[in-house]
Amino acid sequence: MNTKMKKILRTVAMVIIALMVVGGGVWMITGRSPMAIIVKSALHQMDTESYDKAMADKTDKSTTEIPADVVFPREAFQYTIGNMQVFEVPAENDTKPVVLYLHGGAYVHNFTSQHWKAMAEWAKTTGCGIVAPNYPLLPLHTAAEAHPLMLRLYRDLLKGIPASRVLIMGDSAGGGFTLALAQQIRHDSLDLPRRLVLISPWVDVMGGDPSLQGRDNWLTIDVLQKYGTAWAGQMDVSDPVISPLYGDMEGLPPTDLFTGTWEVFYTDVCKTYDKMKAAGVDVRLHVAEKMGHVYPLWPSPEGRKARHEIAKIIKTCES
Image 1 (cartoon, one colour):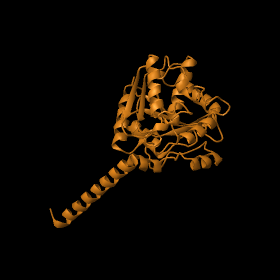
Image 2 (tube, rainbow, N blue to C red):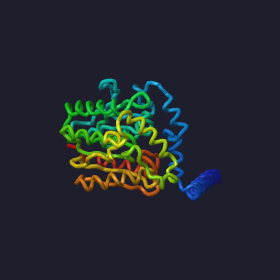
Image 3 (tube, rainbow, N blue to C red):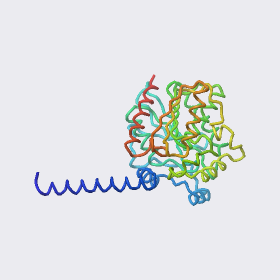
Image 4 (spheres, helix red, strand yellow):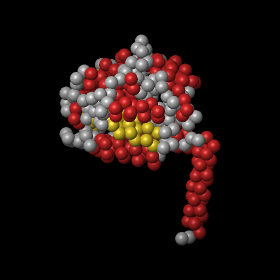
């Protein structure tokens, strides 16, 4: 090995050590994951200032685009259900499952690049189809408008494929939306989807564990409650459509719950697991120690591991 190469390797090693020291210091001093702090800067903020800004923004969010740097293995196309834009990527073949994905964002923010990247990854590694609705959002819309459109989308989806090939998945607000939708599907005696995957689901809009607020460097409980109240509109915040933790869990399809111990939703997700288990649902709880909100979407080893686990779950829905 020549002298120049040795110098390069020595420099790289020093940089890695410095990052480890700084990262470890951040973890010990703040009790928060350095990766979570990086992810927070990449995703939507959840503080009072961002709430005021988001709710004052009357921009039409009814249309969006897939980021140019996100490539799906099969060409995506668009259509509308009512006034709701829907993206769809076909499944690899007629045996592969179709994932209906409801994105998070406190019911006010649209898809992020992390959502698109995760969906593209699963479409590639499992051959699944993707259906991604751009559902109506705050501040111009509420749950009363979004839920009927989502139910209509599900009904239309079943006209082309059997429910046994459908997996409904969502993160954060989209995770709560997914659970509420599943409860409505069962109530309306429609064919149930094969499985649910709920990533850090927001199941009680007035919930959140204050004892974990100091660990969660992203979500702020009082701000979330403001968003939840706005999303409810004229409905009660404890209505299962808004807070599905209070809904009937009996008869729901097999469900996988993902949560981190350092997110304010952790306790509510555990309550959801307990309630589903007591109702006889085939439910599994995936807990990541010292991980924050929606960690399966993070560009971290823990996030990659969770996405791999979710890919295995998707594959179980093949016909």
